[in-house]
View 1: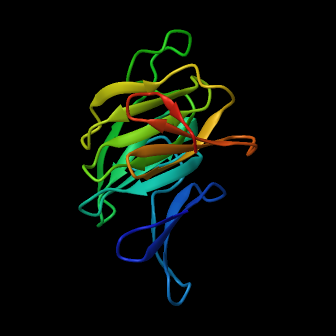
View 2 (view 1 turned 90 degrees about the vertical axis):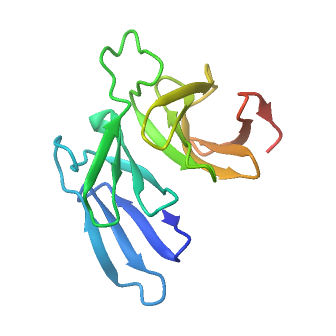
Length: 171
């Protein structure tokens, strides 16, 4: 669930493998993005999303092992993070991407439940840095606020904050 700066509600729907936009005032469905599948613009278990400055959205496409950026007109823009070898992931690759958020500059932060990492990409999907590694539990949903990345553990028992330098902070 995400509310963008134009008061549009965005929801990932794992049952239909789509992203839905809902009118915040009426609660009616405005549009859907994507469909079930593995091609560009299709999803296989979309878990989280975030709106970027400019109106594009980034979707955490968990079972396709990638992130996808989609434009306001539902046009597929790019995919990034796809893992090539689950035994030896390289920087910038994701295995079970679970959460995504962005900062004011449009940098994208991504949590990976299996790799136990939070990684940073620029707005075009280029890997910038591994912000945090070896996290305890399964990092899932992310939020950005006041220069911090807030992360919910997948089992829901804790919320923690991480600075952009990777240091864990008091939440």
